[in-house]
Image (cartoon, rainbow, N blue to C red):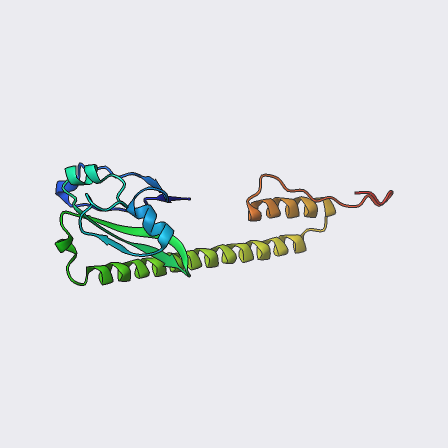
Length: 173
């Protein structure tokens, strides 16, 4: 499995920093969070074995790290991470706030998925209703068969579709 960065932000002074677009679950603290499904706060990236590139972090002035899993229904949906100059930037309630943000992110992801699924079901129902209206207006069996095959292919987004009918003379398809 891999994690793909979907969003990010940085302070203007950090604009030159490049972060990886994709991460595997294997190396680093982000992968550890993904595997363990637990939040983590690392106050010194130089000494924590979970850090993948501590020298790079230190070179960039990022000495602390925090992250939390984004869990949707117990399943991993992502990982929320923070890179900081110093652990004090997180504050006393920082981990609680980070976990709360991760929970909000999970709700947002779930809501977006549910809305997308509902819209897909609505489009499918509308397409089926339109097909029913067209078929009701068609008396020609060949035109009806073609309309059915065309609509099915479009509705299910397949490359091809076909309708095979029994040959009345032989009973074969």
